[in-house]
Image (tube, rainbow, N blue to C red):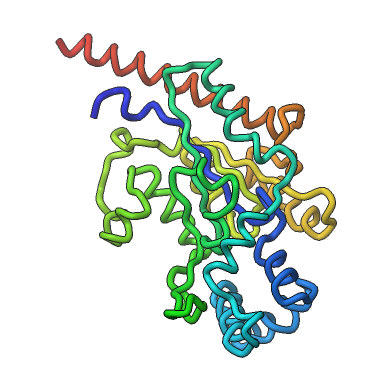
Length: 293
């Protein structure tokens, strides 16, 4: 590989409770017109007590209730499409991606930035949001659909450790389509120094509930792990505090992505640090080539 093939900073985001309050909870409230607490407590939790996986129990519950519902409450592909288009985000998210591109261009215009999303929510919602075009790839849970467009079976499930697999795909330059065509491509051995996006050029941003394996992987390999929390949700504050106490993350910040926020400042500092690292790698590469001749 040429020396410029690895001059990329990858910022990887979780979705629910990171860029927007839980989209599944929002969807349930809007579509079934019930409090989301009822959905998780009365519909999903009983399956969990029977040994169901957390993500499988959620997807099954949505399918079951759709199949049993009258026509107006059935969940179809267009149901997710309409909901995704109207989804709102935390402050500053809409402008974040262009702002960070401008920030990097001011620091070093020869370095590239890419955005990825790895979530346990519903991909059909995420890919129709206003921010979807900013992502190079989106990994999330998916349904299979009947001929009439209604959901009837889980097609792809993204759980805790699945997220780490997708980090390796990003590092090795394996796209979502590539991985579907060859599920074992992620196991291909590519030396760390030849990977398109080394882990130490990654910034991982998430709220922590399903992200501790990713935080650990990115942080242990020299990348930056940023934990976030919604300061208007007391339950989330209490649940994410341990990320900082246990040193799982580099920093823990409020879900405010505006340029005046502390979170944005840390994202900028992370970009600056990785850009400096890439510059040093370039010099090292040129020095090695010079001495080899």
